Image (cartoon, rainbow, N blue to C red; front, side, top):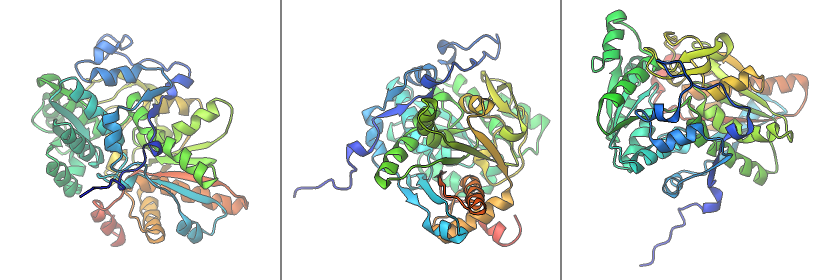
Length: 431
């Protein structure tokens, strides 16, 4: 019997290259070695990362080919839909047109698989057998676990203690995919032991979990560390979001003037905005680029631009970033993916240069608009994504007050079907 493959999307609909914004920006301040304080060289990162990824981290080539093995796996869920949020527009009675890129349709329910797949691929290509990482709410950990499984790699995930307790089913997802999940800080590492001795009741943080994951990678044979945000190469992989959105807007015969994403370390905001930004950098367009962060961890709106460690105990290179301090303990918000003390170097420089802007939004407002969006569009958004929706609602209502049209694009970075305990708390007035 002849089989058909109509379920596969045409190759031409999925980009064949990632866009590297570093080709169109002045050179960034370099990362510094944590010991020597000299600029980091590619060889300095080899104990932690796959060489192919290090090459991408330092590359200034404008277009980086996507390996065919990665594109084949992208076809499982890409291209993701660009959706006109007509229900939300009606509810807000706004002249603004609102679109969202629906990254929640990926197998893990978020955008994180866009970088997990290439990171697993490059590690497998170099003979690595095991990956370590950290995760906040669990989206990144879930993505890495299934990506590693696709390439036959083992995975160890240090999950921030607060989310480990708040989001038990994220842990189950990772375990189902074959990953080992550890509450962080833990007694398995020297970093974790030190933190627990000083702060036995800490809810944990992404900085702490990064310290533990890095230590495990450095002390375990045939093992490398992976990161779901912040780094240049992660921004690179995520540009597939905005590149697809560009093509989809051409089909819709429309174009955004305002682009919004929630902000933890910068990956999904960078993914949706950087491909459009390249036209602004070339003098061909102008956008209002808005990073929506949590008021419980407001590194962009309340932090300072300086060199800081990416982790809590100072194992990682120093990154030029907007930061609240590597020892900052964020509020116990449900948007665990936004509980990171700093911002990636690319996004930090763009904010410093006033090319992008940032807003901070409190948890109450986020869940209020999360409920509204659910009732208008039928999708329950992740707590992280509600920050982007809240910023979108603000802009749409501003357009209504001013009586002018605008086209808003936001990135729905993930669904909230594993965050229903948080929604239950909000609906019961117990958030």
